[in-house]
Image (cartoon, rainbow, N blue to C red; front, side, top):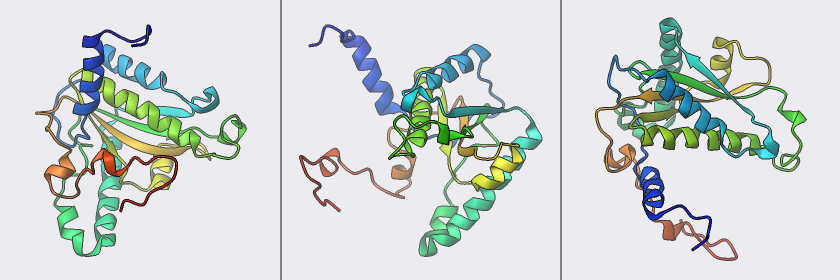
Length: 217
């Protein structure tokens, strides 16, 4: 055991919150997230690892009800287009609840900043590492939210160009996620899409190999 390890109860808490985090779609309507809690969650996101200490994330808190409805409209437009693209699974997909934009206590849009080409450290051959950094920030916030007893859902069903225009983003900035955050009725014991039989979570043993790639599909 490393001298730097946390104590047993603390380690159990970390692994528990990771295991019990869920991508939530159902929220308690008219609930609130205390300002201090929201600040803690944003600070957790801002503490994420990021390539070259570039901090490429930007967070937009949506407090205007009209704007929230406009974002929901973008999500619903893309929901229908996604359904059409799924062919024989269209009806099955359209029956799923895919967002909580109108119900959640807090709505946030997370974006990549503009002028990211100036960040060369760690991105010269892998420019997508800025996106990986933003994903780390979102995951930090997700885990922190679960520890606070709050649900969070990552909505990626939208046209990023239309959302960027709606939020007056500068050229080069790129929306990555619409985050729904707030109290929830309950946390399911399995991923919702697994419960809905949309997909199954594969065992870790199928996804880990040694030394070389092994085809497991």
